[in-house]
Amino acid sequence: MISVNKLTKIYRTPFKTGNVVKDLFARSYKEHVALKDVSFEIGENELVGFIGPNGAGKTTTMKVLAGILYPTSGDIQVLGATPFDKRPEFLKQISFIMGQKNQTFWELPATDAFEFNKAVYEIGDEEYKRTVGDLVDLLDATDIIKMPVKTLSLGQRMRVELIAALIHTPKVLFLDEPTIGLDIVAQSAIVKFIKEYQEKYKSTIMLTSHYMQDVERLAKRIIVIDQGHILYDGKLDELVAQYSNVKKIYVTLLSPLPHDFHLHDGVNFRYEFPRVEIDSPRSHLSEVLSHITKRLEFSDISVEDEPIEEIIKRVFTARKG
Ligand SMILES: Nc1ncnc2c1ncn2[C@@H]1O[C@H](COP(=O)(O)OP(=O)(O)OP(=O)(O)O)[C@@H](O)[C@H]1O
Ligand SMILES: [Mg+2]
Image (cartoon, rainbow, N blue to C red; front, side, top):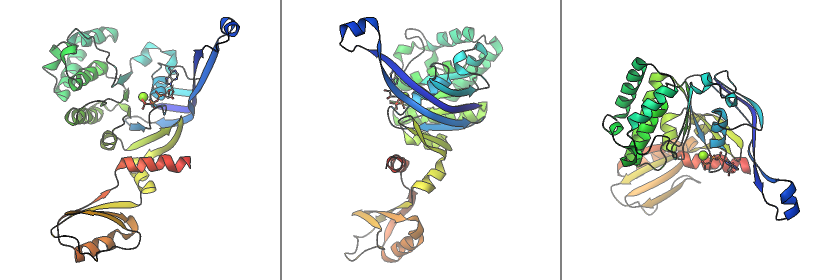
């Protein structure tokens, strides 16, 4: 479905050297290598989380895959096509959605933008009705699509953006930070929608987000990129197994911690009554738990993986070192 082989993208930006003669007769360029030999494959109906820090190359990669940018070199196939040929048959099967950028018309209600896209993508009346009806239901957007877009909240705007971008039921979807700037409730609604949409329409989705909860809730597979290089490509749970050997144990105590309380060598804990937070090595988890249950009186206890943010940070430092 998506096949990327040794994709390299170098941005060349013109700049003035300050030397009048030089600037007059030849342009000087500053080069920035945004992607270097990036390779991966994404199959049909896969949802892949694409993560990495600012400037890692996520948007650049997706723009190349969507045919918005030319690659400097590399072999890229999306749906059997070369994206930057920009053939209409190709463009009709993809969609690129950016959280920070609005595509719908500002002064008008969203329905006008839907109609516009209907014409652009040459969608029949029946199909248009069915798809819009379905998307409006999934996004709970009956009322907001009739209001001028400029009067909508950020979260509402994202919902109508999604409808506009999905009217032609694209096979491949590039979602670039669809939840950026949204509050928890709006964010959660978008995530739920993406999940339901993908299950129903069986689309292939590449998603970037700086919110790890989005990625955890949506993607089984992740690709981690930094400075134009791929650091990890695989299942999210295998990343956890590979890079995290710690389980977090959270205990809520009924009485203060005994002064002589200690755990195995090397097992750290933080304590502020009534809460104890323990970093237990996975290999010692059952011993640590049985020690706690024998020694302490508590009202609550839970065992969790380390937060995914922590684990990802470790991937970056491990590969850099
Ligand atoms: N039009 C451009 N001209 C020159 N350099 C660019 C251009 N667009 C991006 N870059 C540079 O390429 C690198 C990758 O940028 P990109 O936007 O792909 O990163 P990103 O992973 O999407 O980051 P973010 O998380 O901040 O969105 C950055 O160093 C950026 O400054
Ligand atoms: Mg970006």
